[in-house]
Image (tube, helix red, strand yellow):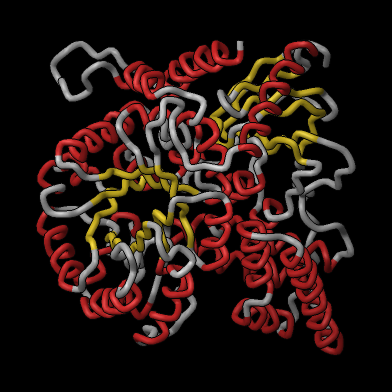
Length: 574
């Protein structure tokens, strides 16, 4: 095919690439053995299964050792599924009853998958992981190649329907120059890995069905445009601009300021000491989110005070003189913690999670606050502690009192729209807020963030989301408080600049995004950021009865902002 094709999708990782297309094609289903295994061969059949599962596990762990961050985590999760004792035991029982190894492994995975689907939310999303592990083990039993990711020996743009977590963990930025997916969502595993590796990524791509392997594609991760067989001169100009952006990132050392000197604070989202060290290396102004629950997800019992103190201190001490915000236990939903009192629920995203867990076990919160207070003692600036999933002002008051009693500074993570609308009275209770845009978008747009078919609703550029963020930021300014944005929105340099124009001067993101955001903002004046914000949400988003002048869609919002920023950047370069 030689004709030019113009397609588009939702950009989730900025950047540009120009290279041949390679489709990720999942292997055709293997015809399973339906014959009953004779009794004298069943022990050997068990050995075939165990050997295949062990080989798959070894390869996944070997790749994990060579990877870092999210890539390594995904590969280790897949390896853990392949070694799961319950799955192996159930499969072995079926084989010993006469079921062939490949059919037994498939049946037991299907049973587990049904339970995950019934549990809902992120456990349902893990079904993709299960199916991928099943396919790898079955392929190994039959002596066939495992996984869908093609072997690459030259720069390529990968096109796919979706990408299994273990395949996402194996992405190599040396060869994978961009990723275009027909499915996926803003918080999909492959998106997280792409951002960590700096691979431009577009999801929910439309109009690419007829694209063939080998055709040249130009991917623009800033606006979501995908051009097949583009004009070579145009492609070179886009790539040159992207290379200049990379050079600006490499040269940027912080601190983050607009071109006219307005200070913007960039924080890191971390879960352990390694990520905190990475955030410091990238020039972070501190930590905007310490996910304390991830330290203890694998424990059977509540860690004692000393264990919690050690865990928190190892991370918090990385930033002894800078702002540090810890989020209390966000158990429930996709993070079940048995000792915190969480139980399986039919609709966990709207169930007992975050601060709501104290309805069952308040002592869990008190113990955690006691441990954080120990670490906070003696710091130049007291530790800031925020609660997740807060819905009412009386919940905020209760939490703020408990935090202040222990000498720390209280805040709230605004994820529930109800509290965003009550921002003014909320700021009379707490010292700061952090807008968790991933969940806030999910709840405001009534769209499950694990459902790839709803990706367009979950785009952080949706005007309703940005209007609500602007409302909170204005309330914060009136009370002399800081509203920080924490989520995928903060990691988008263009959207981060719009948020700056709204008065959001604190942004918390994955450490790998800090230089990208900081260098982009440094090239823009605050007035330019304000003009982009007005173009997106209108002159007065608080006036519900006046004429609406803002954007009508996420695509419209992004294009309005990009037009203003690109004009400003071009004027500077000329």
